[in-house]
Image (cartoon, rainbow, N blue to C red):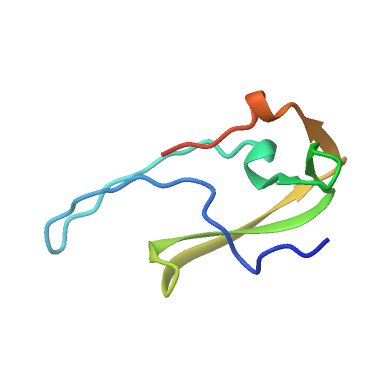
Length: 83
């Protein structure tokens, strides 16, 4: 199954004045990286995921990686998405 090159897992709009800084904290759950298989199950595959934070998909300002150690099947009603 083909996966998109990148996809939005959640977002939060932060307004700052020029030169202003703030700390932003968020929680990323494995099910936010899940996709639906042809059998209808939501699955997060084991492997390395690159997380990108920025003003847009063209303006990435921070990158990091997380490792999913086990493949996870999630009930679609329990799949996480934060906006």
